[in-house]
Amino acid sequence: MFERLSLSTSFTLAHFSDPHLGPLPPAGWRSLANKRLSGFLSWTRNRVKIHRSDILALLTEDLARQPVDHVAITGDLVNISLPGEFSAAAAWLRTIGTPDRVTVIPGNHDAYVNVAWSQSLALWADYMRGARTPTGPETLPGSMTDFPFIRRLGPIALVGTSTALPMPVFVAAGRLGPAQCDRLRAQLKQLGTEGLFRVVLIHHPPFGGGAYKRKALLDASKFQAVLAEAGAEMVIHGHTHVSGLARATTPAGTIPVIGVPSASAIAAGHKDPARYHLYRIERTADSWSLDVEIRGLSAAADGFERQGSMALTIPLLSLPPRATPPGTATAAVA
Image (cartoon, rainbow, N blue to C red):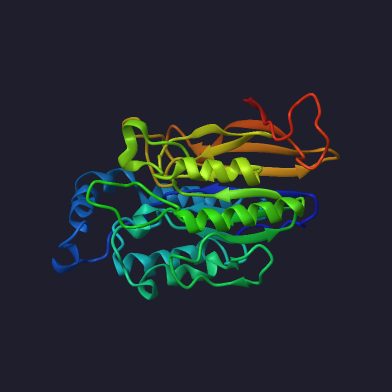
């Protein structure tokens, strides 16, 4: 779908999230006799008007014209976890690119209720192939416990996590869990020794919930502790349906945490219209250069256009300290 570039010290990663693919497949009353009923009502009464397939098509058409090396999708491909949604999403993923060019992680809607692995995320397993241990071979996931995974791609490494697990009605929170945090720590430490630009993919933003605990990452403090100990160069997420730039604090400096809105949404309430990002990552003599291009839905909703940019410099953690603490990201927003 997109042009292949040579992999050297530079890399362009595209990122979008929360496509919320529609329409919903037919569902009998038995399949809705659980949490799905509230989601079904929400979709048919409201969300179907916001998450539009024509908007998502415009985004993917614009993305196809960009020279990128890889695409990352940070969850919520489906809406209420009907088996038919997972098979439709698998077909849609193939229109975005082959599994070696696209990486996916699940979101909370992809685990809305318990669904057999074989009928759900197994259908996307090729897009989550990766190393499950710091130095192990790439394998397919076999269950929800097979996260995080590593994809080494030229000068960068994608580390795909899962915060997706079934929650009670009206709760959209997520959790990594102690075992996944331990594996993530080991993976990030190893990738750091390899000098790679480490990009952590997570669905929920890695901060405390506050007033929005029902939608938050419940073990955000543990995730932040992993970042503080092991390090990373960037964290990207979805879930909030708004654009976001924050920073995770570590003893070595700060890590940029960047979120994107839903890829299929029109502007609605306090939520942003659809956008996606292009991260142009390049290694220089003593730092990483990270240029972020923001491409968003036009005011006429008839295409996507450049809507801004950010330029960040991230010093190499392996170098001796300079005046700017290693790991500190400085940003200029256009």
